[in-house]
Amino acid sequence: MLLFFYAVIILISGKNLTFAAKPSDNAVFYFALCRIIIGIFFAVFIFSLQKTKITRTFLVAILFIGFLVRLILIFSQPILEDDYNRYLWDGATFSHGINPYKYSPLQIMQNESDPESEISRLIKLEKESGPIFHRINNAYLRTSYPIFSQIVFAVSYLIKPWSITVWKLLLLLFDIVTIFLIIRILTKLKLPLVLLSIYWLNPIVIHEFFNAGHMDVLTFPFVLQSILFYLNRKLNLASIFLSLAIGFKIWPILLFPLLFKKLSGNKKYLLFSLLSLIAVVLIVTVPLLETQLDSTLGLIKYSTSWENNDAVYRIIDFLIENILMIFNKPYFCSLCITRWVTVILVLITTFYFAIKEENINNALIVKSFFIIAVLFFLSPTEFPWYYTWAVIFLVFTPNLSFVLYPAFLPLFQLKYRWEFLIYIEHLPVLIIFIWEFAKGRSSFYQRLVKANR
Image (tube, rainbow, N blue to C red; front, top):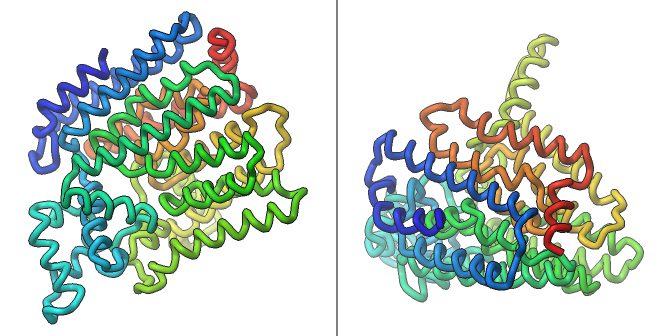
């Protein structure tokens, strides 16, 4: 019910909380507080499932309210968010046959050229876009979104140019496929269907996709379909779909070592898996290679120096700086050193889980969850919508730490005023996460599954 009222309030008053409306600090504070309260109730709801008798009517109610809230928010204006402007612009560019990685919005604004040139065509698109083009954030950067995502952006443009509503409806389509696959995997693993509420009623998932319009949900059906094929021992198809997922977002590439471990005894399947991965990587990189590879390319900028809402990353950076000072070593390129340290830690985590033996049906999913969770904690950019990458695995291996996260992540909206909040946002969850990992299989998970068998 809280989710429903939240959606209605956002639909009615969300326009007062957009960047264009320049909301007051108090308005942003109350908005964040509202989201924190919903996050707390979400955690209480999931925790209470250990003692709740689940009926078919209850499951239908979960599915209905999750869908209804999504539908309402599709028609709301994105609150304190503007990434969707880039999606709409990329879709227009790509649908007109222009490489979306070639020009930054700033280059278009500063150039005047021959009427037949690509820049001239883009200037015409800029005039057609209304305020969208001029609201693109980091206008000096060229886009960073992989080519398969660009295809979906273009589809949105072809259906109805410059429409955030059409874009969100496409997200809903991918989300419906996601929940359908979640249900199939839960059934395959003989886990309680009520666990789908961890995704379907998750307030971060709902807000970040259907109010803010973030595109990360595009990856989920391909990752989940890969898992389903893996569980059905169709490993070649699992490789293909996991490769396709990389065409939307790069992070699923970390899951390939888990698949390679399974295929290590069959050279034919292993070679096929490697070839499918290489093929998609080439498809993703070729459009980039046709452009100038410098710091104005979003992917390069993002991977080398981007930093936002990061707690653990800042602590590592602080420690490295002070260690170097103790030994009187010059501290240069702090971002380079800290980034390499975090990359190495993520790779060590991936290698550890790739070689770790597990005798449970959902071992691949459990390992995937921990790898993506560690990636999120160590990332220099811990945006709330990146948390959703772990949620698609969390459904099948509920951990208390990540169930609690939606009560902390809304602090992201307040960190611009109180920077110390990033530590309150992430560190309590990290401590619980480490405790759960050290303890082994979560007792919360065991009680939840046992209560709903």
